[in-house]
Image (cartoon, rainbow, N blue to C red; front, top):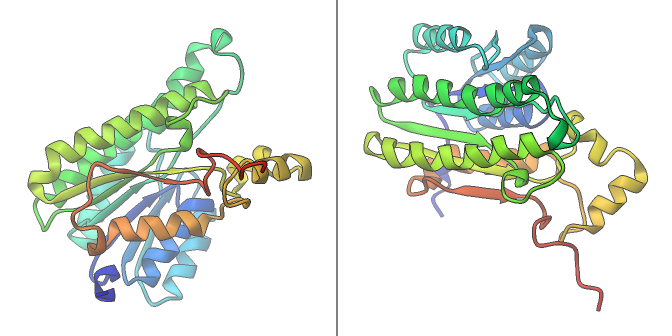
Length: 259
């Protein structure tokens, strides 16, 4: 195996939602592989902590506060990257939200709009902007963070819809932008131990029930997702596009048999 294909030396990567959890793990993994990294989130202080970790690896890191649901902020973000680095090779659309949990029949319009704007419109606009930079260079890799909720309905109904739509958007962008050597793929994590998903695992009984529902009988950690993102960002996946890789420990196939 040619391990050099996993190197990200000379690459510039943008990771949204990069201040904690999965985004932080991806940013650090990319830096370990040789990339210079730009991280964004809505709040700057937590971003700076991650940026200092990356700089400690002797890699460049720029931390920029950005709300991906606000198009003007995404435009400013890409212009800043062009000015500072002159290129963009990797985009990870990791920022997400789920402001409403409850019956679909009672959901208010604000919940639909807020979830769609961050989970679907944001990645669409930022990918458009990034692709226009990538096609002027050597192409690139765009990675959209979907969810097993985009493949199997749960009670996070509006969130599920956005993540399912993101999978189809991934395929559409892959089909159109392959001619520019831009690969677009998605990752669909299951239950990963992050602050965002604490309600699904932090309580001991709930966590044990979750573990028993998975073929591998363990919950995921952010590094499990970061390793797949590294593969999709690197030349090791140079012939992979339009795909959704499920990282769920076997959640969709279910726990071990009873016999």
